[in-house]
Structure formats: C-alpha cells, structure tokens
Image (cartoon, rainbow, N blue to C red; front, top):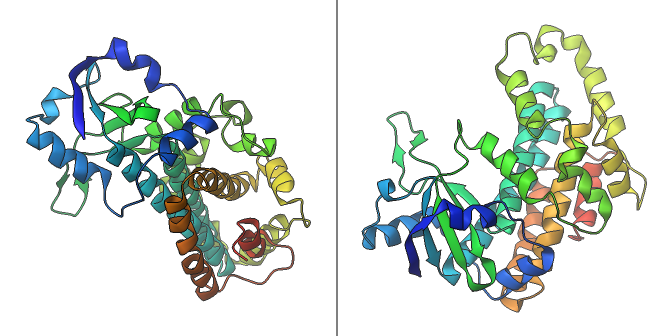
Length: 327
C-alpha cells in the first residue's frame, strides 16, 4: 500500500465519488486482487495512516487522501462477502420470528437483511462507510468520525478517503449512496432493477423510515401484543404472499416489490439473490476467489439445515437454497 496524494482536493475526486462501476469494471478490479482475507478494512487503514503520520484532522470533505493498494480491494471484497452472509442470516431469522408471531420484530429484522445487503452491494462497487479511528464508549457503543472510501481508479486499486456523505449514523448515507451508485447499473435479469433503481421506490429511505416507525414510534407496530388475536392472520397472510410458482420466483418477487404488505420482504430476497449473482460473477474471474466462495457453500447449507426453516409448499424460504444454487 502507498500514498499517492496526501491532499487530493474535492474538485479532483467529486466525479469518481458518485460514479458507479459497471459489471466489467467490477470483475476486472476484483479479479486481479489477492485471495480474500478475514480482517477488517478500518484496522488496516488506521495502522497504515498512523505510520504515515496522517491523523483524522488531515481528512475532510474538501480534502481527501488518495491511496493505492491491492490489499484494499481484497479487504473490501472480504467485507462484501461477510455482509452478504449477514443479510442471509437475518432473512432466515425474520422468517423464524413470523413463525412464532413476532410480526413487528420480523419487520425490523427483515430491514437488517436489506441493510446488510446494501453494505455488501456498496463494497461490490469498491466502497465502504466506516470509522477508521474509532472509540468504544463505556456502554459498548462505537463512536468516531465516519469516513467514505471509494475507488478513484478501481482497476489500479486507487481509493480516496474523505468525510463526505455525513449524517446521523451510517443508515441514511448507505441508502443514499446505494441508489446514486446503482442508478445506471445494468444486470440480467432486468427484474433486479426493482431493488436498485431509484425510480422504483417512493423514497430511497422508505425502508429505513419504516423500521424506525415500527420499532420506536409510540402506537406504531407491535399490534400482536395489543391484540394477540391478529397473530394467526398475520402468519397466514405472510405465508400466502411468500409463495411463488416454480421458475417464476424472481418475476413474482419483482412484481411484489410494490405490494403494500410484501414489498420490503420481496426486496430483501431479491437483494440477496442480486448480491450473490454479482459475487459469483466476480469470483468466476479468479480461481482463488471462486474456491473461497465454494468453500462456504457447505457451511451455508449446514446453517440453513440447522435453523430449520418452515416447510411451506412453494415458499420462498424453502426455495431460496435452490435459487442460490446451494442444492
């Protein structure tokens, strides 16, 4: 890893900051990288920047640092895989919550499935929102300035670190950047566009705001505890909407991304499938990467077997392993 420019101005990196990579660029950049390592990007960057005498005060929204290093690319891909599996984990968790009548908490958990997919998909684009110099508070929370890392020249593993896209927490910036970066992205099948094109949603923050409303706003959500009699209907409605015909799952889920009752669930499934499809395209360019992905296959199958998803005829939860080519 090396420093290309300690003081790169916003005028020089504002274009790349909002430029989304095409699939061929993504495959070329990651395909020339090293095998995936299980370590954290922020730790590597913090240690390197400290050695170079760069402090948090040296990086702002108008003045970034330009780095070059294939290890950055490898770490970003590693984190993409980690977030992808977190998304899958939360999707199975939200279904288990519905099974036992925890409808509101299922909504919240489903949100996190999509949120982790968003972070995986940002990293697939060579991007990361992270706290490089972080502190842990007495109550265990992580605090510190959030930094935006994005490709300046992805093929040559050059990245800018700056503090643009600041707001409360990581949730709002992540959703905004996701829709900005994927606005011109093309992928087959075209049904996936329903979960990454801004024109297909009412608001780029609607899933986040629904989670906040359900979890925190008084008298929103938690109907199952105020009126337990609704639980059987909630489960039945979820079961009915989660069924798809053979070979039409993606088409059906795409259509349901605007359904008032099912849209967020449908989007979370499609994001998992979309993310996995891109990851497989990336890993197919490099045998070491492909081996890493295939080694995880048995672990994922074992996880799904052990969490015992409900056996519902034609349900997405039961069809997901085959849709992901795990069986």
